[in-house]
Length: 320
Image 1 (cartoon, rainbow, N blue to C red):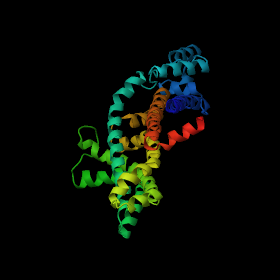
Image 2 (image 1 turned 90 degrees about the vertical axis):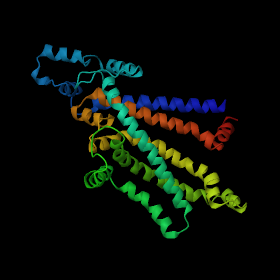
Image 3 (image 1 turned 120 degrees about the vertical axis):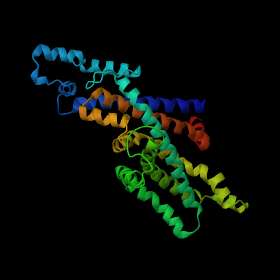
Image 4 (image 1 turned 90 degrees about the horizontal axis):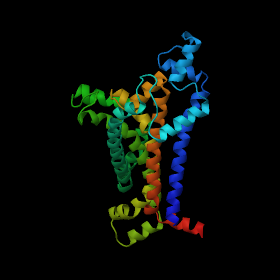
C-alpha cells in the first residue's frame, strides 16, 4: 500500500508540473509588453493597424481572440488534454500536423544522443575511479569539466570542419541515413556525458570510502568486482537524478544542433515559431518538452525504490 501511495504521489506531481508548464506559457503571452492580439495577428501576416473595426473583429473571431481570457485558457487547456493545440497562426495548419512531421527526427536524434551520453559518461567516471595511475586518474577526472565548458555549437562546428571538410567522411548537414546522425548525435551527447561523468565521478569517490566497500575488499573481492557489484549501484543514484534533469535540456540542445546541421526537427520548429511569434506552436512544444521531462523523471522516481530499498523503508516508517 505504501508503494502504491508513493507512485500515486509521483504521478500527481507529474500532472501538476504539466499543468503549470501549460499555464505559465499561456500567461507569459499576456504579460508581454505588446498586445497579445496584435502579436498573433502579426504572426498571421495581418497588420492590426491596417484593419477597419469590422475587419479586426472578424480576424479576432477567426483565431479565437475575441473571447474572454479565461475562456481562451479553458479552450486551450481542454484541447491540449485531447492532443489538439489548435491552428498554427503563421502557417494556418493544425499544430499537431507540424509537430508530427518533425518530432520523429528529433526523437531519434535524442535517443541516440542519450544512449551515447550514458555510455560515455558512465564509462569515463568508472575508469576515473578504477585507475590507480595518478596522472591518468587526474586526467580522466578533469576531462568532464572541459566538456561542460565548451559550447555545443562550437563542438558541432569543429566536428563539421574536421570530419566533413577535411576528411570528407561524413555529411556536414541535412537529414538522411545513419551518416547524417553521427555528428549531431556526438554534438548533443558530449555536454550531457560530461555533466553525468562529473556527478557519477564524485559519487564514486564518496561511495568507495563507505564501510561496506572496505568489508567487501577485506573478503578478498577484486577491485573491479567491488566497484561494479557493490559501489556502482549506490553511486548511480545521484547520477540517475541528474540524468532525469538533463532530459529537460533536450529541446534546447536540439535547437542548436538542428540549426548547426540544418536538420528539420522540433528544435528548428521551435526557433521558427519563436521568430514568427506563432504562439500555439510554441505552447505545444513547451508542453511536449515538459511532458518528456516529467516522464523521464517519473520513471527515475519509480526506479528509486528498486535501486535503494531504504526509500521504501523510510516511507513505511513515516506511515507508522
